Image 1: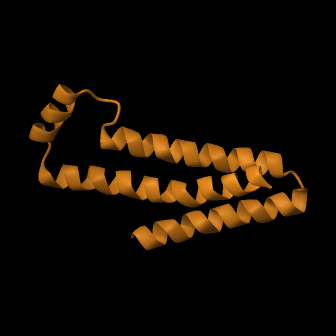
Image 2 (image 1 turned 90 degrees about the vertical axis):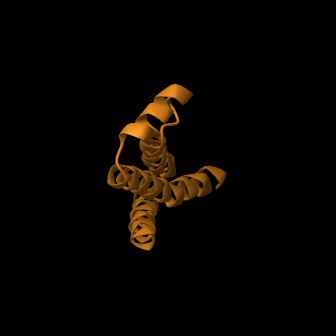
Image 3 (image 1 turned 135 degrees about the horizontal axis):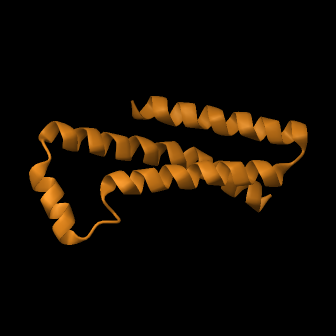
Length: 96
């Protein structure tokens, strides 16, 4: 599943880079890629519980089932992996 997510994200990034070459507007494409990457990281952070305090995380941990925890960790991991090619492509565009 991780490989498929990474491949889909890479294809989207390459498609947007190709669109940038056709339109010759790399600044816009870089901002789009950066936006997609940041949104993916924020979704991953929300599912990981980064924005919660210790007692809230502890309460959530003890009240959620093993299946719910597995789903949450899977979503967190997939959105984090999805963000990597987007942010990498945006970094390449901003460096160029």
